Length: 480
Ligand code: TYD
Ligand code: MG
View 1: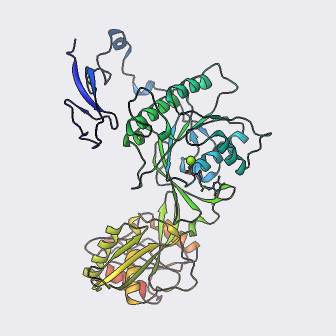
View 2 (view 1 turned 90 degrees about the vertical axis):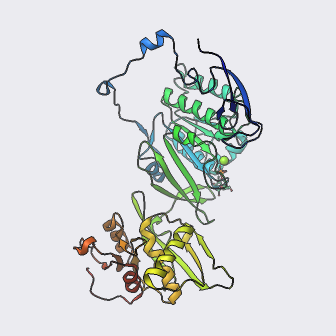
View 3 (view 1 turned 120 degrees about the vertical axis):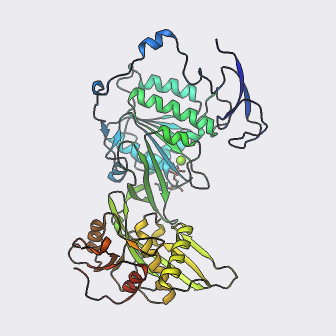
């Protein structure tokens, strides 16, 4: 028998220590270390070692070829935007975490999905942790719920995990054939509380425990579960990272520039690609797809103004045209400011430094402001050249000729590299009326692939060349 040991486990983050501290060394919470006796929280027993002989006899490795690879069955999802982000539908038994800031519309999105399911005879069970059933009914009515016609939308207003699990076992069990819910929605995982976990609802330990219990239930019953998650001030999903590892899909729901446009991105998807983006609009009667999402982040100005440059970025399987706007002005204070919106400020500082060093622009005494039109966000490295060109255009007070696209990644040496999936990006720009594109020249001075019809490609090897090309009036000499 193992010698009994004592360990001290943090009730917030689950960190274990062999001696007591007033403050948890892992999460810095005060007074959360609790004494545990036994083989220790991190010991063999806790990790599932030391099973009985009977268990050991049953546990045998299974050859991979003997494992039944049943295709993941998917439940149809409406709107199609969300279906695409999920990889083509909701996989049976999968767990989807939907994160977003308060008020962005998580409950609205899930209520809308639930209503579209019940209209197709798919039963939904909604765990209401944040709102009363009456509030959920009111929201559903706003989204077009018809009490007489639509059956199969059930609410469980409970936050105690043990009671919920009992109710779910019963609802999902074999005896409940006709009334068995097909989808379970838990809104939100932060409000759930397990009695035997000694910390407050919403603490990392509680979230981890409740999330794991619901995920296990989903897999065992083959019933997809949506978990709504909160987002912290820094924009991360609240709670332990472990929750994100536990689930199959992590969707992020965000607003765009304070307007009514909402974006849903997949950050992790075991059943599809990540980086997919759904574009929706919050209307008075719920979330609806946006008609022309590809042009959402274009400035919309008829005339070109100095400081604006358009690039084509990839959002999953779609290409979005995005306008970057820059304003460069002499600094009134000692330290020039770099204020950005929708772009990482370090990236802007880096690109400004490249402009100074490699293209000879004098930005030292200037404030630089950069923003993305329509409240978009630019993470795509292929937008480097557009950010840089926008800054140069504002500094020189020279607009880019209308219909010019700028596309390419920029290195510290000032070299321009071509964007991934460049032909697709050029095709989309051409489709939207762009007639000229400044891109990277082929590596090693080789031939560039033929550009799509109708768009003139001007290739540049360096930042200096690219900026000069982009700001000069459209000229011949490129490939069309
Ligand atoms: P909600 O789904 O409650 O947000 P979350 O669950 O993410 O906290 O939605 C909040 C906002 O959405 C609220 O300010 C009202 C607005 N809204 C609409 O504009 N149209 C609608 O049809 C609904 C239901 C909500
Ligand atoms: Mg909500």
